[in-house]
Image 1: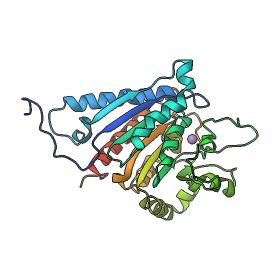
Image 2: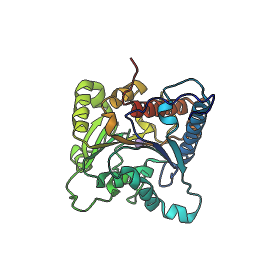
Image 3: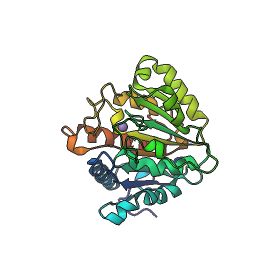
Image 4: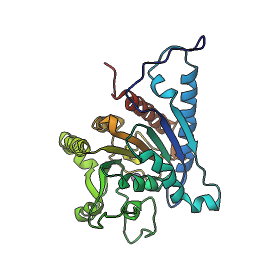
Length: 303
Ligand SMILES: [Mn+2]
């Protein structure tokens, strides 16, 4: 029986049973500063959920507030740093096993912190990763470290058994501003990569193609590297590149995702030391809240 003063439960939604937030502030091998960003976003989410729990009138946030839990990792010892990739895979595996009845947010540090999630995701047949990023993260130029970094980690994804070296990963990319990598090199790793230029110049075609790619998936993982945003909207990132997406562009792209198939969202590269009056923090936390609602309500907007 509901206790007095407690607001009534909303009717059961068709959305996920629960939402797990994994704070994975790994930020060495590039992008240091972004670990603090993951922790800051987690603090904001805790505050939002606590506020929602205190609220006495029904709100849309009720659909996820009671099903919400946060698990936080830290990399403050050599042993923890050394085991980062194994730890990450162990954390990601149960969230990508089976049908996407649960939903997760992975708050990473630098973009390489998403590598263990990619490795677990591509082991599951029918999974497509929708990646939004200013970069393609397959850099292999003379100035680049050949060991795994946030700029080349896609090259270091461990292929599951039976996955041919000649086959690109099931990654659909949008938003890069790369001007060096030839198409053949991109095609070795990405099933499809739409640059920001292509998006600007043939937007409806790109959106239709993304929708088509995602329609065939059983499970979708959304990976947002914050530098996909234009620096005017999101200054707080380690490697800002001009001519990025606006928040409304990103919302338009997110509208292509069949929400019931969205297993999780991975976020990285928010470096709060570079923020300006919390503009980037405000944008990313708002976007995460909107995505939580959308995933649980299975729609982006009320009518
Ligand atoms: Mn990037």
